[in-house]
Image (cartoon, rainbow, N blue to C red; front, top):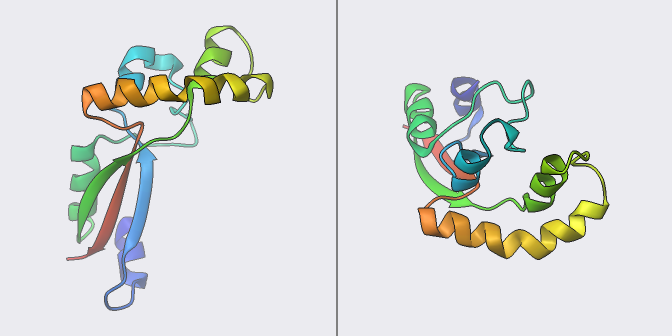
Length: 120
């Protein structure tokens, strides 16, 4: 898929790719209950290294960065046996987002990764 996308880029064009970070602290702490697994919608999960490799193997080059996706409301909902779509947990998520930021910063990770990719 990446190879096909590179073929669609005009000269100087770039792809912005954002994916959950399998190496994030929240992923390691929550294991199979990590809300960003999204199986079967996400067929592949990435670390910074595997995302970089996928872009290079598709004929591109990229800069990898980290970003955050607020997800603590989802975590509390799932851990307490509720649906992550239960609106009551959105406020919980907003209140706990600083905790998530501290967890990821202390691990030098981000909940998500992004790549700004160009054809090599």
